[in-house]
Length: 242
Image (tube, rainbow, N blue to C red):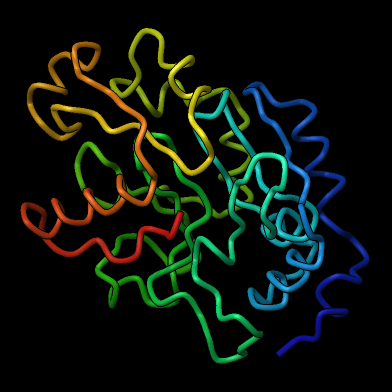
């Protein structure tokens, strides 16, 4: 186990490089301040990652990111006071006090999109969680298929990819005319419920004709879990506590 000072006092912190990435991003990104910097330090200690990693830098220095006008939220180490975006500890149900034996059972949830899509880092044994990909690699839970997809990249590469302007390609078929206004109007705790459901033939044939309304993100994730258990190959596991 590494002490907090070992994680924060590093020779080559990643935060300056991250700030440069934000400044040069092809995708709109808002970097949220942390309401309580001590939350970020506690998060770093529980994660046992250092400030030289991009995950550690974002956890230590921010309250998260709002990407592409609110379509995607990336969690930092602390709650954002101004926006109310939860931190990684809340989303992943960290123990109240540091516990060196604790680790996320299925993996670490690091982001959600407004459709209830989940970005997560694989845990140490993906096969045991019935998830694809390698340990420590990024996954996406797709609400239009109710399945996990391996993204074949680590967290740092994933952040660079988010800011590269390729989200339109990734979400091809899952965005409709006027999605920007609907995403921007949501609170950080909300997502968009789509009916007919995204995995239905009706929605995939004409997404613009669907009915959409703002609902708590927790409700959206719960519905996906329920449908996955009923119709999917297996329980998707933990999708985050947003």
